[in-house]
Image 1 (tube, rainbow, N blue to C red):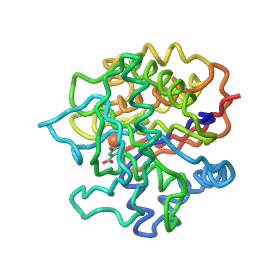
Image 2: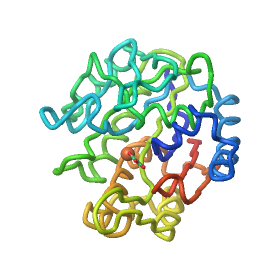
Image 3: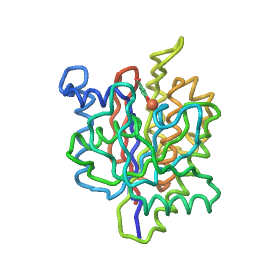
Length: 279
Ligand code: DHB
Ligand code: FE
């Protein structure tokens, strides 16, 4: 049977992708951030997941205000990098896993999570930047990817507790798939950041550190954080962290922290990364 063995939480700041694409990772501004990614890349090379479920938000690239799915799973064989205004990133095409993706959708819908299925979904920085962070610049991405797009752009947004419950249901779905494959789940976005308004540039390091700690120390506290608290403490875009709770829902209560990296600033954002493994 398939095994969901690991979870990763990581920021998906577009500037990190631009630094990779424009060969700036060794410049003084970016080097400390990328040095901290190296152990995560080593982990990825060592563990070789067959499939990664990447939980991310679409930033008005595949969807717009005309259509706002709360949870959309990509069931296609391929996903093209999106054009976000500067042409698509020159990164490999993202290969999907339709058989597992449809299996997960069926299991989730039977468990009363009313998923949207996407047969065509260009993927933006929310998904491709985490791949660059974890995999560097390969000719082809080293794993299949199942994109799971979550609406954290337009209110009303799903609560953290709902995201966590979805993660639990994803674990059950994956582990009822009848093939011996290694599956990981990545929650992306965050950490604290606000891109607009009076508090643009807000970073709250104590909030982020407590969030990273409580992924293993007190998950109930994280599950109960509401959007008002995310807004107040971590900025309007800090609420992207609910997507990490989908990852957390798929992890054992006693999942182990394997690695973490936290660095400010990356663009206007506090960049965090954590790797958790199930027992
Ligand atoms: C930025 C955009 C994001 O989607 C994000 O999560 C972090 C930062 C940005 O434009 O800097
Ligand atoms: Fe974002």
